[in-house]
Every structure is written in structure tokens, then in C-alpha cells.
Picture (tube, rainbow, N blue to C red):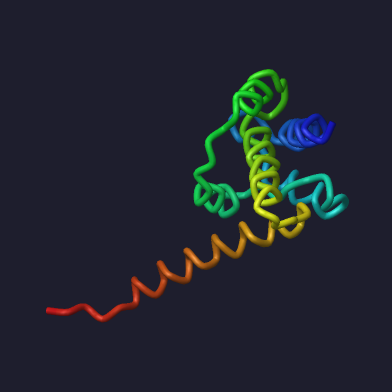
Length: 127
């Protein structure tokens, strides 16, 4: 149901744009829906997507099957399923997180990567 709602909102927002300017509003839709129901919707943006790569979990056969049959925004669906799988993996390690806490974890990982990158770019050049 959450994937259907997200996909519908992306479609509605996208239909407001004209012709070749049509852009998927995946990130905006996830943030808007998360604002109203943080327990149901994960925040999707480039930082969260990049941070998710930190967790190299192997997708289960059930995961792969579910993603293939979802008729909605595939990119958000994959991200949401990865979030759910990560929550399950953490839970099996004794670390319980709600969706909001997982969002915060992903953003903190992304922010740390940005801080490290910025620090490296400001290092003095050794000749």
C-alpha cells in the first residue's frame, strides 16, 4: 500500500510538469509522505541511497521476487525493500530501529562521508 501511495504521488506531481521537463519527484514524494507518516515511509534521496550502499547485504530470493512483481516506482520499491531488509538484519543482531531511526542512520552515514570528503579536499598540497 505504501508503495502504491508513493507511486501515485510521484505520478501526480510529475503530471504537473510539461512535456520534456517531466521529472520523477521520488525524493520529494518520499519526504512529504514521511513527514505525514514517518512510521510508514522511508526518506529517499541521493544521500540515503548512497549510504545504503554501505550495507552490502545479499538480497534474499524473497526480496528479489517481491521487487520484480511490484508494479510501482521500481527504484523507490528497491530502496524501501532494502531498508526493510536492513532493519530485519539489524533486528537479528539485537538492534531494533524504527523507520525514523533508520533514516537518521542513513543520513548520518551520508553526512560523515561528506565531512570526510570535504576534509580531504582541504588538505594542504605537499610538493
